Image (cartoon, rainbow, N blue to C red; front, top):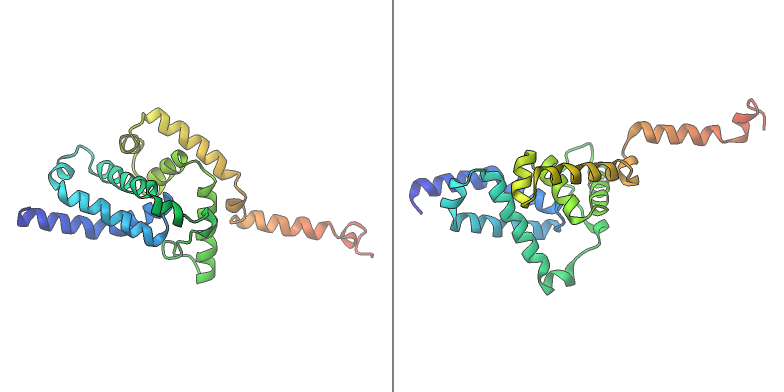
Length: 194
């Protein structure tokens, strides 16, 4: 690889490393394994840098490599022995909200909700909304039609909107439950008398 290509590759890694690791976690990898997946994808990018830079859609091409590396890792016996339940995933470093307990709770809720989706649905949601690929880029990355991306997104978002882990995050929903509980007390129904 020429020095100019080395500099371009290095800049690409610096700009995309964190996003690729986070995307791998959202796609189902544990945080420590996600770094391995991202590194494997970046090694493939390095080996085929001319193809990466020559691709019509570089982001779609690179995230396709990331997905392939993740799938390769998941197929091995080693991975299956170590695979955690979806509830064990934690990505507290990827969310910057409030204190640490809020970040852990939010990350856990997101992982539980994403764990309720099929692999195909999760792939579309993560690539479209976390990685922020367009519908066409998402379709190219996954090797499916844009119409399939739209239908999977529609089903996925409907499922996520009804997921109890996500619903528990909504402040108005939590406040509504509190007011419902207080109105169920006998003293509230009888004008304050026990």
